Image (cartoon, rainbow, N blue to C red; front, side, top):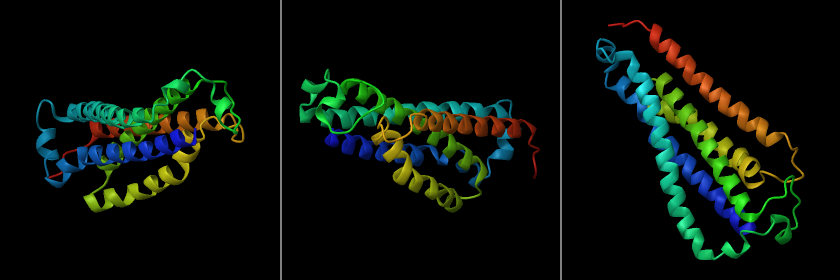
Length: 199
């Protein structure tokens, strides 16, 4: 159990940081190359925002899926499949809120990382749209990455179902983060539709 928790914690950090690195340039690249004014004069123009968001979401899913395939192919070398059907409380001294098998626990942690990855992808798109240059884009995301490593991964992935953490923490945290990221992107789309072209 400790081996898997160490493994999935490191995988979560690697995957989410990879998503941030890949998604971050999605909007700022056009701003720094001064392409926005030209885009707004075309028929596709403002609708390009939705296309980029959709492309960013798809890219995040693809990146996460590919990295999961690589990391779990390496994890399979541990030969832990014999424990997949056993309840997790049988081979650890920790107590959990839910009675799940080891395989179900793996699936739940993977889904949790997918949710975190999508949240960070949407936040990265928001920052990419709002920041003026790459330096400020990197600077504003550093506190979020620190929070990811120090708080989110330990409590919302590694100790997702531990009995000593209140039962409502995980579902509430995931719901608040998901709603916040979606609302920010929706607000950006509304702003994009109203934005004037300034020469």
